[in-house]
Length: 216
View 1 (tube, rainbow, N blue to C red):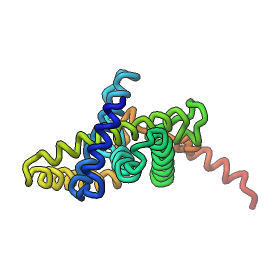
View 2: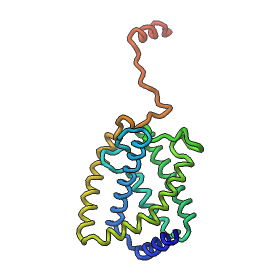
View 3: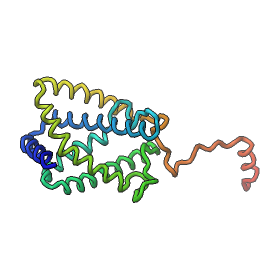
């Protein structure tokens, strides 16, 4: 563990204040794709179904990209304090998940996840167990993923990273726009909110009966 902290310290010192826009985009894309792989793999393991998780059509979950990138940008200053990285990472990751879940419910009336059966959950959108998992994920991003990814990015030929980032970000932007209008709601992907009733069909005979008893 000491070797991990030493490696992270050295890599953070090398990168401090010098993470370029292109490198930031690369980190966002990698974390988004890693989050999608995690969700798909977990669903496959627990439910035995291969499902494209998330609102988008492509293999990325932007909530993981945002959380991972912010953990690098905001928590790097606490790299010598693993407990602070874990705690703050759990807090802001949970906040991101709650806001995202509320937005999806408000706009689409659908849930893409539900923690109602988890202990200490809030509206089924966030919970203590998932917050702890996100805290560990932020530690992994700060101490392991970021140093390795930044070194890998900087070891690529000069034009490769900008080209890949531009291409993937363009695909991501197109997918995001299309998914905003027509989100991925396939089988095993979304969960109707508890307050959302099924559409009611009123038969013509029922309408006539209601009109007959309606006061003149």
